[in-house]
Each structure stands twice: as structure tokens, then as C-alpha cells.
Length: 248
Image (tube, rainbow, N blue to C red; front, top):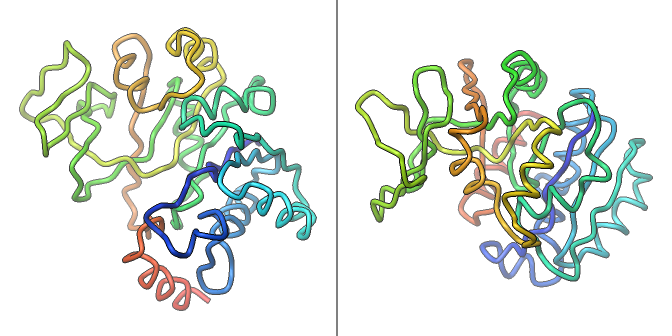
């Protein structure tokens, strides 16, 4: 099975830790974020993994070479010339990800014990173009879903901004925060090409929201309790260390 790890971010929230390394190589409990995501993916059966790189990208290449790619088939999608954001990053990695099966995308700075296989199977059964991990947590920006967890729109609670233009927020809709993991069907590639209109750099979030009337974009909510931390924030590093220590 195929997966992609977003490891190209600048890690500005983690400075000075990221002054000499990419965010993905910041350590939690003696292991880098990147290693933790790779081993989680491998334990779920993902053996063909693409890692995108930008900030101190050569250090990620060296890290993977030293660890012999952790025994997996790992590809590098090189964005050192230009950071392409999520949509552009997926398009650039198309040669590694395209095919006849969905692929999973996982941010390098997400520490979670969610059941990736259950999420993957949910996506396959739904027939969606993309399935995004979401949960009820405090933030300012939310995906908005109907009762079937089909994406209907997006709202920024701080500014009142909504998308798409035709979106009407109705009582009973579910406002849920994105969790940094998607499962995506290869049918997305041609649609991303059309949406980008030749731009190399763009995000998947506006694509999902603007195209949710035309394509099935689903939210995935794991009912069983699970750990989820955005360890791209300094205040979460200490909590992550505690979580890792408890699970060792």
C-alpha cells in the first residue's frame, strides 16, 4: 500500500529547534517525528512511502539512507527549489502515488495512535475521492459536514469567512477540525490539475471545499478514543514526551 508523508514544512513554530534541521527530524522520546510516522505506517501495512522535502531536505535524505529506508520502498519528492504546499506537493509526487489504489497522506508532525487501516477501509467502502480525519476539538477553522459526514463547506469562526460561495451553514451541521491525515483516490490527480490552472503551489483545503459539490469528500471520525497531538507546536512537545513515555 502507498502513503505520503508531508515533511517539507519550515517548522517556524518550533524555532530554535528547527534552525538547523527540518521539523520532521525533531525528536520525541529519542526518535524523530519522521521515524515515528514511518514505523506507524509500516505497522499498518504501508510499504511504499513517498516523503516530500524542502527545509534542510538533505538531512532527511541522509537520515533515511543511514536507516536503510527502514526496510521499506521510500521515494523522495524534492521540493527544495519551491515549497509547494499540500495540493502542489501531492501533484508533484504523482509519479510515485498514481495507480489503481488509494494512498494515505500523513503530516510528519501528527502523533496519533488512530487505526489507519480502519480509516483506509472506510474510504474504500465509501467510494469517496478523499476522506479526511476530523474530530471535535477547539480551533478557529472547521470543515462542515452533514449527518452522513459528507463535506459541505468550511468556516473560520474568528473572521466569519465561509467557503464555497454557495455554502449555507444550517442548524445541525457538524463543525469538525482537520487532523492532518487523508486517504485519497488516484482520481484526484486530474481534478487537482484542472483546479490548479497551472499553478505549482496550492493547498488541498480550498480544493476540497470548493469542489465538495462536485466530488464526494468525506470526513472520518473514529468513535473509539485515541491519542492525537499536533507536535508542530512547542507547547505540545512536552505532552508528546509524556505520551511516548507512558506507551513505552
